[in-house]
Image (cartoon, rainbow over all chains, first blue to last red; front, side, top):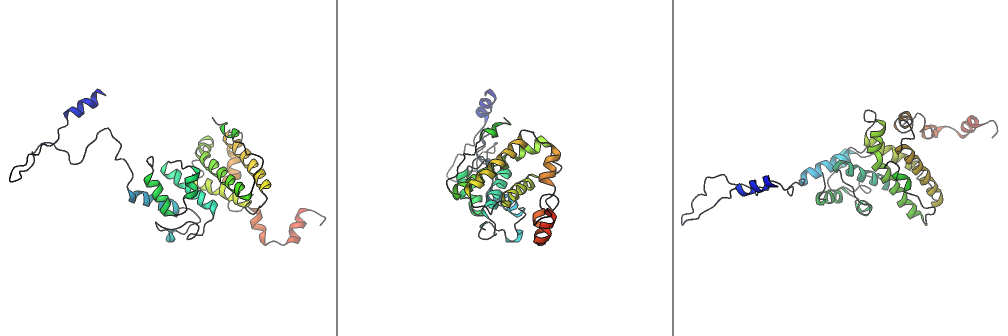
Length: 126
Length: 132
């Protein structure tokens, strides 16, 4: 706690003084992005990473033809799987992203689209 | 902690096929969530992967997918739950798990049914008994 207070007190933000000609900001140590040292707020997965990992899980499913897998493919309609396979894929996604998806949501996930959206919006997705 | 699964009872009567179906999926999810614990208990990391075990469980469930009577499905779920409990509480041993759920997927012990599908009924009855 004390360390945190110490660090926060000593971070310097750029003091930009605009003159008529618009001078350059001070050449001191300034922060490009908002550097919040003790926050994991920006720790989310990027959308491409989510898409890649979801597609990998679906492609490695033994009954699936990897060439047919796209980010908006429907498990039962396009890939010809049945409902048990659907549940199995969702469980595979749970394992990959270290989540625990409640039953109601899991029943809703029918296609790659919904899976990617759900995982991307889940705060605990790893 | 390992015995927590035993307290999940399958209530005796499913009202309809739909309810039995959702119970089957719940059972499948419980089983899949116990897979990491099972792999840890029996040291299966070198032998099989989690997704292979998941596929094995799914194919076991699929073997009985043609059944339409909800009471029969309940009974099968009860037996499945019992088997899962036995495995999770280490009442079984590693060779049981390996023999029953890891090997045999290509036609050794348990998949004999599908392998003998092309066999004639005469032969099947003949192998079973003298009188048919």
